[in-house]
Length: 153
Ligand SMILES: [Zn+2]
Image 1 (tube, rainbow, N blue to C red):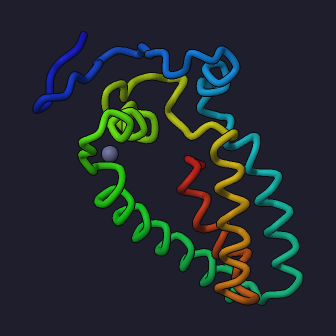
Image 2: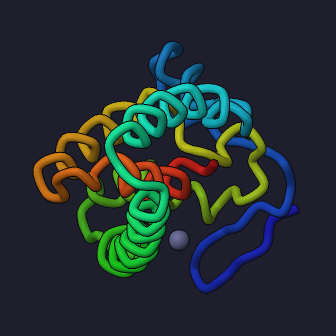
């Protein structure tokens, strides 16, 4: 079943749409919703363990909460400025649909509920480096708090 919100068509079923002509990209764009847990839980455990050796438990918890707050603010700004932008060019509309539009057009697509690791791992690594440069000793728990929500854990 499809219904329209404004000028957009929204699917009400667990159905999908092909995004890439390339079979490999298309294959890796569909993942099980538990994939982030399997991929990130070991990474978060190692990072958390290493950080716990350096920080007091209270500092760890406060820094992780700061990461969650930072993500909440970042998500709002990203949604407001990027995800819900209305690009005018054909390429801009394609990129927008790929990055976020599909999430609204097919909200029940069970194979695209979470970000694929092909995209999320490089982003997580970039944020790790960025946080290390910006937050000193607190970067690891802040990063954990940040990515817990970014990647759907
Ligand atoms: Zn949205």
